[in-house]
Amino acid sequence: MASSRTFLSRSIVYTLFAVSPILFGLVSLFLGAYGIPPLKVMKILLDSMLMHKSANPQESAIILDVRLPRIMLSCLVGMSLSLSGSVMQGVFRNPLVDPYILGVSAGAAFGCALSTGFLPYLPIQLLAFIFALSSVLLSYSVAKAAKDISPLALVLSGIIVSAIFNALVSLVKFLVDPHKLQSIVYWLMGSFSLADWKEVKILSLSTTPFAILLFLMSWRLNVLSLPEEEAISLGINIKKERLIFLSLATFIVAVAVSSSGIIGWIGLIVPHIVRMSIGPNHRALLPLSMAFGGSFTIFADTVARTISQFDIPVGIITAVLGAPFFVYLLRKGGAKRWESL
Amino acid sequence: MGKLIEVRDLWFAKGGSSILKGINFEVEEGKIYTVLGPNGAGKSTLFRCLLGIWKAERGEILLDGRKLYNIPPQEKARLISFVPQEHIPTFPFTVLEFVAMGFAPYLSILQAPSKRDYEKAEEVLREFNLARLKDVPYTDISGGEGRLLLIARALMQNTPLLILDEPTSHLDYHNQTLILQKIRELVYKTKKTILMSMHDPTFASLFSDVVILLKGGEIKHMGTPEQVLTEANLSSVYEMSLKVISVDGFRLVYPSLQIVEGRS
Image (cartoon, rainbow over all chains, first blue to last red; front, side, top):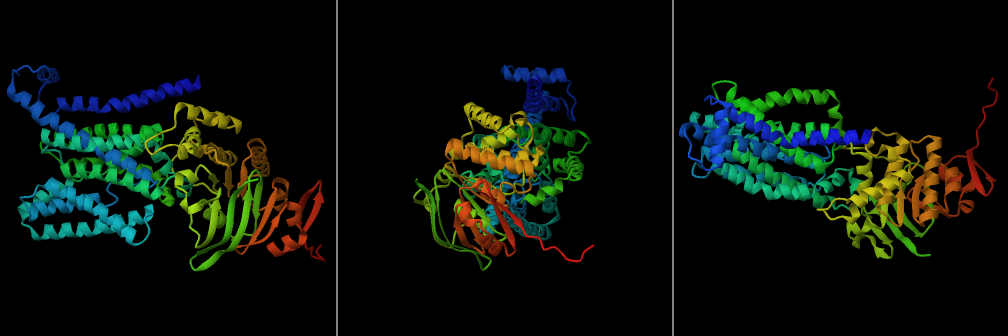
């Protein structure tokens, strides 16, 4: 009886997490600077699905070409950040790790600054992506050169590499003219205001195969998250498999960051919240973190675009929502987790 | 009797100082081997070398007749399982999920245990009286249960050899006896081979077929408990005066107390 009840409540929690992006997305679609009543929004959606010609092209453009791609993009970015966040936390055996820990964000920031400041003919996204990947590669090489690719060494070299790229970003900021400086600063805060369908397509197509691969490997991540000696004695080639997991997670987060800028906190707190509600088993944790990450980011971006007449960078909203939660975690003894590195 | 492990002239150094200095021994199938020795004698280091966690600097380790370093990790995990002395939990997996990780050596990176595997895991939990805890986070169970859980996971690996690093440390007297009895039961029932370390010579005498006395990275004595656990051997290894009484073929070991005269 007791076990069937826990099973029932567990399936309710699973279902809630799984469908949350759809609910949040729908509600978000109703909200915006230009007021369109929910019923009308539904009609526009239905019309477009049935390929009917819209009665009000302006309103349907707002729904279908402005709000919908933006919601989709925020959902996808949130999913990517949360998925790679949970993977990194598993690999580093530490729930306080975030997906930027190996320098992805600092690298992407430099790519953006470089493109905006000096190489305007190269798209920001491309350079951000290239430097995001290179910075992680550099972190890994620094650790490897020091003959220690343990999680702790990787975190330390991630800090080193981040520091270097952050310094380079500051240098670019110092050198460029104020107009360019402003757009760099804006990009660094993260925003979905420039979302369009093309970006949604790129992001979903490029990350889906990697996400599927991570799902398939999710049980193995349980074993990999055990203390090192035990993972070895269970037959895991930890160096190789860590590298596989980190590469996949890094790729996903690099794509996400290069599309929308540096949005903090999501990849850290979403996996944490989901783990606290459903447990640490990565087979459930990875897909549900992804789902909840999607809805959380839709929520944050909806706040960002509706709370004032300005389109506030979403990174500010996630920080405002995330920081207090982190304080709560610390109070619950989260700091002890660093000892396991 | 086949030889599961053959160690020849094993040397290991860390931080410039030698921890193992020319270890030679063999482990035969179906016996319990207990390594005794003071702290820092090299017991844990020896086990880590045998498991391939640390690489020996010199010497040869043969596992089931094959060179240890030539055996792929997964295959090795089907030959030796390991129960660490201390387990620092990272994530609070459920007891069932934790035990099921013992299947890892039989699954590819893309696989997870099947329903049947989980049923088998539950069976092992029942055998260890842990079945009622299966949905509880393993971080919430007691120390004795935790040690049993680690042994249960090692059993899931279904290996001919189990290495246990101080399976009785941090346990109360009842749990120490329980764990050692469980281990002996395993050997009788399933013909497993056990290599473990311990601190209590009396327990070693009660529960082992072969005792190895290790000190300063060298094997000082090796043989049956009767041969090895003598007053002279133990006193010299532990550098203190020890008394040994033989009862029912076992050795009871206790320190000879220096009574302070003239105390009122």
